[in-house]
Image 1: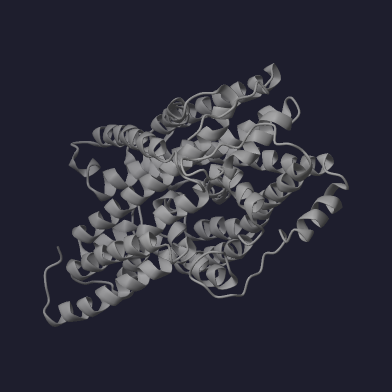
Image 2 (image 1 turned 90 degrees about the horizontal axis):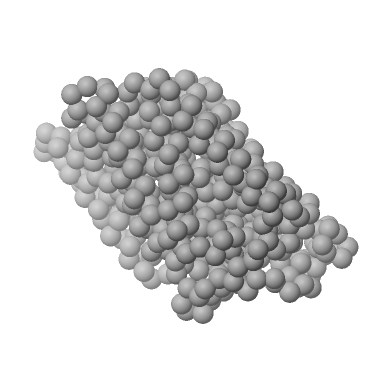
Length: 494
């Protein structure tokens, strides 16, 4: 990556806003960690969190720095086609609220992968956990990298320094407060993220001749308001069928099977609260994504008539990294004080993503892989859980550092998660439908799905919203016949 030109655009008021925010979040996380005694408190919050707090936490996680930076970049470089995927996201959340949530509360489980263990044995559960840990670390690492973009612009820091700062700050309050700290700091951070996005949405048109109507008119002439595409294709660009089928299935994974979100639903007080949280997210996600897409459109219109104040850097292949556009605008053109608020919005999105990943990765590694169960008492299990959080913080640093050459962080993050999402979703569906069975057919199907998806990704013939559906299809093709065969010759679960 080429070096990034920096600007001294942050004033004393901006820095005061940023420092106050960081201190408040860390202080809140440490305070919420009081009285934790065991892994149930640390990973599930004692199953006593209100649905609205969980809903805001989920929204903060899914509208992460990828949304704050990556979604405007998508509209800046393209059009509103991503809204087709967003509509699928909303439908998928409603389906999950109705169908999946009750299974979470039938037993005391810490992750969806425990359902694999109950149906097929520990080997299936542990493989599911490993799949999540690998894909979750890769996807979260990319999210960490994108949060470093504004720090590069603000301070001229190297990527490595910025990565260590974000992960380190998030690690502090996650270490002390566990999921309770993650949920409540997420709720605060969502409000700040939304405030930053709304300011940009209403401020940018004031810089454009004709205001809102002028900006939308220029975008329409350029074809950038287009959002419906009924051409069926498995490859890019986004299309209606990709949204109504591929994105729905993708959300069944991200919100039903991926521990990043499932852990929050498991922390609710019961089935009704879990459903309320997901339905609230379904209603909120459409206007949220539209907001940030419009910010990207307005940035494009603005920079058709004004020079970009800081050159957009290129990766090693010479492609412009449009993920830098919104941070460049914030640093160079936002008013004093508001500039600090906008960067706080990015910090909020960033720290929400990191803390969510740390808690989810630590939960799965200690509970599903059995590390906490090997300890002699609850206090020892809690210590292991906290040190697991530190370990995964280190892994996120490594992956984030290796993500520097990515052109589109949005596509990269979702593609990486999609390599295993179909295998995990398909395995959980089989655990619900078949109730009991041998482990090896499911394990074979999950491995076949992963291998198949690596090949699919390497060809570039299929766009990431289809990945979960394709991966689940591979698992069903392999596992269902093998499960039927295994029933003819009963085996002891592995």
